[in-house]
Image (cartoon, rainbow, N blue to C red; front, top):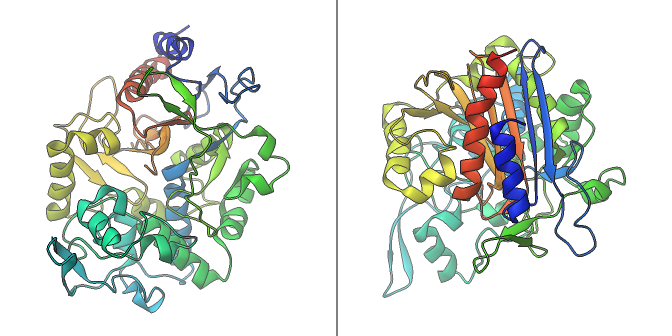
Length: 417
């Protein structure tokens, strides 16, 4: 057993982690790694059910990769334009202007009108001025002044029609840009995001165990893992029966609404790593992977992570704080080489339940839309990987340390083949 496998096993044995699925594969297909440890639920009477490769997980922000691919498909077909004002399709977006401060005495926001248009490129790269309300003190005050609950309501418009925090295209903040992108895709195609992705991503790749609505799928609902949370009293995982990963949504959330088995999602990562032509044209893959942040926005992104320990843990995906970073349509880009580990241009992102993924020349990790899951794509190394579990709080440091060991040692296993 590899050292990182022993560490994950010890975490499960100690009660910190219910279960985990670890996957990695090379572009050539010569290296394929799969490991499952622990159980899929801590509910009474179900704690003996093992975590499996086909166990269905809420993949949260790992959804964003598929929404970005869908958007670029629509660009290829002339249905969307990357640098066009999106207000024609989304009249609600930005209607509250830019919130600059809050007058506590009058319980009123101080706002100014935006000057720049919001574009699809801004939405895909988190430079539109949007931030999730649960991570912004200003937006929390704005919600409270209106008697509203954070990220609430059944629709994307309910959850994400918010004041902007900065002029579009001038800074970086993690927000609902991909939810709005999914809504645009639905408008221009006349299909739900579920139907669109099924026809244009999942079916072409032969992926079956994936959907926005797993409880409506007889073939998936009995395989769903249950969410757990780390008890502040015991430090151990306990069942979290009341947490809803889609927060009451009745629409497909392109920023975090998909449920999938680990092996189904891994099939997508492998397709992206090999730049499968069934998904995108070569030019579109170039757009998907390239650094999208100009110097101003890149500095804002890197300064956010270096100055805020909580945001570094939440969004940094184990990339060293001092390392240069940028952002692509598919996730965060590590812009430095780390010998023996990931290469420059590795794409990473994660998801609320401590999920991560990576694709290596790019590495990707898939928020409170992050569930401690991880994904990566390193195109130069020709390697991608995924670590999937279902435990809160998002990007818990103790869970991230487990994932970090996996991120490092999977390269060594790959190099040995």
